[in-house]
Length: 230
Ligand code: 5RP
Image (cartoon, rainbow, N blue to C red; front, side, top):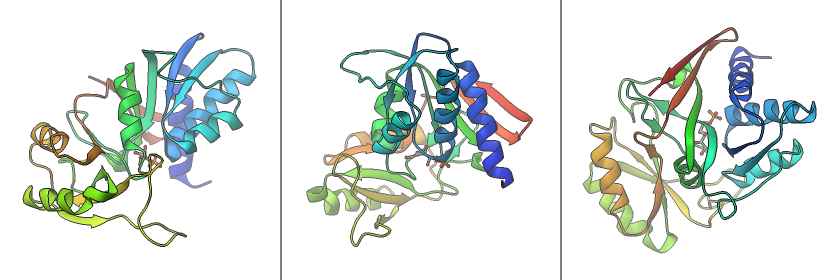
């Protein structure tokens, strides 16, 4: 097993140990969140834990079913005890870029419904300024892709419509929307950009998570995990 995968598994086990019996969870998307879902599933199957989860994507839903984690929704459960998820970048203020897996809109809805939002990363995801490694994913209504793209360019980004792999044409999200990847290199004022993006008609959601993470777990090696708290 490569080191990075072993670190993701260690971080997944760490957050699984933070989960208390009888609680409701937000189940994140991506390879690190998948390790956490597996670790929680194993605790469930050993009989030491009962939980219910809200999935942030079709992928998370399928994994939860595989590990027999009972699923619920935000209709039934207005507040979750703890949501966990991966991230693509984390800055010093614990603000994030998410959305490599195009699940950031649901991920943000679920994180916002949780009393605690725990972010799971390895040290390669730490950045001085958001946007230095990754473009910012923006989920858009397909008929609004051109005007939204122009608005993003006016904000200083270079913009690319994300293309499918093993599918011709654009990536279509779980909601049937498209993704514009906006490269800012870097983002100077994340709070301001968050407000500006939220105000663009046709934007369903974007991958900037400002002031949302309560905890960030940074895996440095399999036996060294930093637990940062807001
Ligand atoms: C999906 C996400 C993921 O959580 C993020 O891309 C991190 O994934 P990984 O743990 O595989 O690096 O935001 O939309």
